[in-house]
Every structure is written in C-alpha cells, then in structure tokens.
Image 1 (cartoon, rainbow, N blue to C red):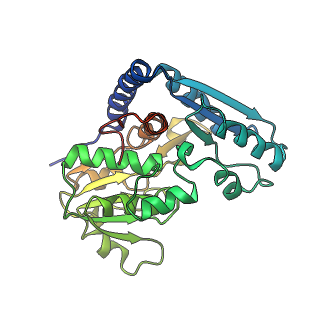
Image 2: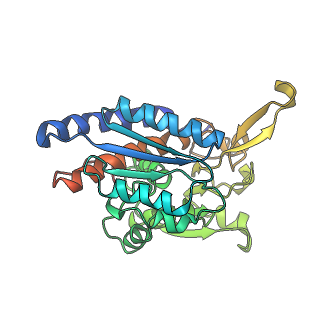
Length: 300
C-alpha cells in the first residue's frame, strides 16, 4: 500500500493561519504588533528569494517586517552594530541574520551577538544549551516544523524508535533533541555509522538530513515507518531541457514511498514549514516579551 503523503505545504498554511490568529490576539490584548527583522548581507540570489518570501509571509500574517540589506563587503563591526540596534528595538521581537554570510564575517560571532530572546532561528549558543537540557528555548525552525508534522500524524511519539541521519547543528542535533524530549528512543546516524542500512531499518521514524541526493533507498526503510525528508538537492534534468534541474530529497522517494507508512515529498514537504515556523517563533518571542500566553501548538 502506498505511503500517506504528508503535505507540508498545506500544513504550513494551517500554521500561518494560527499565527495570524495569535497576532490578532496579541494586538487586542497588549496593543503590540509582533515584528520580525531580517538582515541580509550580500547578493546571494537564493538568499534574496528566501528573504523576499519571508517578508511577504510576515506581512500576510499581520506582523511588522523589517529588512536590513547590507553590502557584501560590510565590515563585521558594522554588521554587529545593526544587530545591536535590533536587540534594543522594542518593535523587533525576532531577529534573523540570513546565512550563509560572506567569508570575511564570523557567523558564530554574529549569531551569538543576537539577543537569545529574539533569536528566532534558535542558533544562539544559549538556546542550543536550553534545548539540550529540556528547558524553554527558541527552537530551530526546520526541526520544529518536522516535529509539528510528526505530532500531527502520530499524536504521541512516546516510545517510538527514531533515527536521524545527519548531525548538523542546524537540523540533525536539534531534531534528535526534540525527538528525545518527546520520549522517542533516538539514534543519530552519519557517514561513519557502522551498518547504516541496518540502523535505519530499526526506525519507526526516519529523518533524513544529510545533504546527499536520494541517498536512502526504500530497502533501508522499515515497513510502515514515517519518513521525513529534510534534503533539498538539485540534479540535472536533461528531459526538461538543456540546463534544467529537478529538486530531490535525501531519500529515493518512489522506492521509500512504496514501503513507508507516511512520507514527506520534495518539494512541498519540510521546506514550506521552515518559514511558517519562523513566523511561529516570532509570535512566541513576542508573547514571552510581553508576558502573554504562548501560542498553543506552535512551540516544542
């Protein structure tokens, strides 16, 4: 039987509707409009598209959107000054510095200069530590989106065996921590894992976040398992014409969908959830800053 397709695009639309409703509640209760500031350094085309999309969706949710576009040769001191300004601006509840930064800038230094309470990407070392110890934190958007979809599909995740393929600070490690916090038994697998196929075959939940196109075939998947594919990879698609590409995930979709109980597609799976969760994190940050009830169902 074919796997249930977890429609991330539709789910993200539902999340954005919830965000918009909470924005109206915050305006009514506190007279405050949540504000998200995005800092873009340089002219990276993918980052520019992403920032435009964030700004559009922020405004559609009824929030204030602030964009700071800096030249590619902006000095570290000037970038840090912008972050400091946003840290001290009461109209800004969430700050996101778009990555990657130009090579001459220290990404860790810049990210850790953001007020942890406004760090809606969840990358600040303080938020990493809070998440790792099970305390209230800002949670990275992509893992949060994965968790929301898993909870929606399964209800309780307690007692399930989960394998996260990939150990990045952005997805793999926080994803594993979120699953552990939801009482899963969690294995973090990677390129050095012995018998990786055998490890994955034990999983009720597989989260693939390794950045290698179609790495996971269907015969690695336990029948009925849920597969969350975080990967976004471009491959040549000569059948579409010269120079054309197609998007694929980290799992081989067709063979995995034939075995899995549920699976996210690429595109249209995890991707749309990332910006939706960024908006959710901004609302959460605004509620915390103003002593308001946090939005139910939009946090970890």
